[in-house]
Length: 450
Image (cartoon, rainbow, N blue to C red; front, side, top):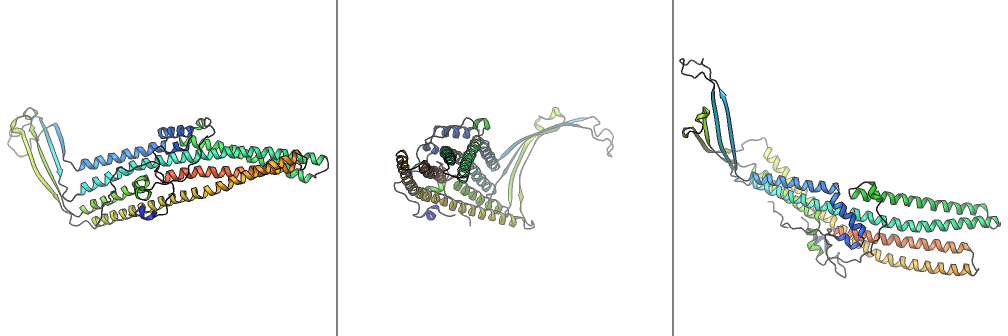
């Protein structure tokens, strides 16, 4: 299995240093409505309920495997009646001709010595699989919360785009009105009017498209929390706090394997597959079972509980595989192949986890520079608009210059808003890549296979 610390090397470091996210990492995004939506999802989501049900099912299989390693004790009882044929060559009167009652009651004990560890290996495999299913439920929780947070901040970005689209429409309406007025005075031709009216129509279409996207986004959030469209109508405009700065845990490479539920699940499934190799290996060796029975049996139920009706036996049974057509070898090769696949899946999961963190770090670092540049752009656009307004009010420039400056400012603010939205999404991606507050409580020792 690949070591995340080696893969990460020194490429994932930041100053200042941070910590792994908490179990309620979405609270850092600073929006009470988001916290409420996540709470509803954790309570009502059918996907999360299905993951928890699978975990309970795996725990039941673990209990079955544990029970197989223990002695079994059972009770059997029977009662009935029989009439024996008189025509069996015996002298008349020797065989009773009446209907005879008969009964039997006995306790039966059975124990498999499990000399080669087949059942113990099966229990180990089931234990690891049950824990993996439990961790899968934690992974489902992380994916669900991440999807809600990401969709929620998409909604925030859409509302910001709507504000800017509304401003762009108002600008286009004033531009069209100005073009029409200039045409009436003979200062512009019909082409200029058509161009301005086309710009106004496109602005209206953009605003309608954003309204549709907002409605669809709200529906998606309602579905994620396990509710219907009526819940979507009650989702208000997001009010998030500012995005967080970049800070990574100092012990990130070392602790990552125990902080990501998908990595922990992949490791546990590899351990389960390793244990199943032991099950397959035991198929080459004999099984020895110990059995014992004690009870009462009699013809005539009135005699059943007499001392003379006591029965009992004890013994052992041996099963030694001699020729099975290669079934045991094939089973071993299949188990080994399953283990190799599980290890490969683990390694691929580790590589993907490191990449997700590296991508989030690269995005956060780049966005810090882009936001700084875009902020400067907005400042410059606002200054340009102020100058254009002064020139217009002084009669030095016409309204077209003022409208052009407004459009430039709207474009600059749209760029900055999009970058801030990406910054929030990068915070979500980083929190999820760091495990979303998950912490492994199982042993990290992988089983060696020889």
